[in-house]
Image (cartoon, rainbow, N blue to C red):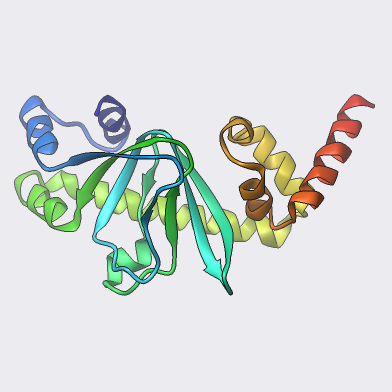
Length: 193
């Protein structure tokens, strides 16, 4: 809860009464490692906040998982298009490690927005974060080679290499696990020379 409040404070300030109302309208849930807690085909009516753990966003492409993004502590997760337009989602979310999520349902956000109008910011921020995530993914794939994406990931989210299985990192980078191994070796050799 503390992490959520700190995150929300970067957008809006809440007094004690508002914080109490917020606590009343959220659910905390723990998912075990490898649990898929949201699947394609469902209509998203929840926004998640990662208070502890790591979540993988992936798509099922012709029977193969394609990893698109990793969410860690302090990030909102929302199947934005499904949530906004009430249509079946095309994405899946999986806990990569034991993960604690704070969950806001659409109906609870609507109730909260009536009680605390500035709380509507939570839904907007979650959907905006998803949009920014999508734009970053597209830009990365359009403008960078797999090796450049690997180096960027190493520089920005190095801890993922300790937390996430290598096959998911490879999928995220758009390469096979074997190609990832070769990229790692090339980058390592460049750094040593």
